[in-house]
Image 1 (cartoon, rainbow, N blue to C red):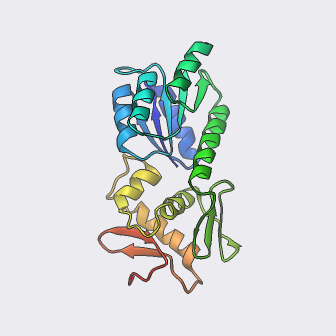
Image 2: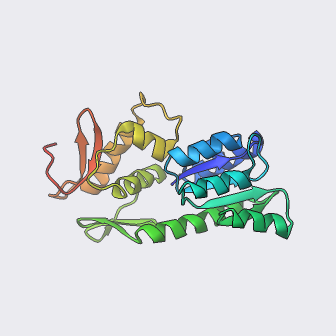
Length: 227
């Protein structure tokens, strides 16, 4: 999943970024409210982790503004304040959950999983194409009933492709969503992962689902695109 972390304490931000990356998520980080609000509006995130005390614009204002502008991405607010009034203000501004600093990473991760699970369930419980199935809850992938074992990044890549069926996804889009906004588009890492994923999901099947659209990107489709 693609997650935005808006946190002005660099040590905390990088701690969260490192831990969530190890779980296979693509993480963008912002250190102030204005930049964080802008990124939340222009990018498609699966979750926003938003600190309350931020320079330029506080997290309560950021949350309220992105909600007013139609951003429905789940928001987990972080704060050093533990009063009921502060939590109510955050929830009333549109936050979905609240976590008090300091926190154990295990608790943060549990809350992240819960919010992402709710978002996945609200989209589509199981993602399918032909006889390929991906269950976002159990993270199980099968084709023709046989389990396919994927690495964390292979799974993230396949989920992104399945959530965008029959669409040509550029290397830049894939890099930003499956890795992060600082991904180097000149790197060949996407080509390597696509090759590994294609081998795992298409090998031995007459119907090929993974396609390279030369000069444009990659697409998951049942259609014959001539590649």
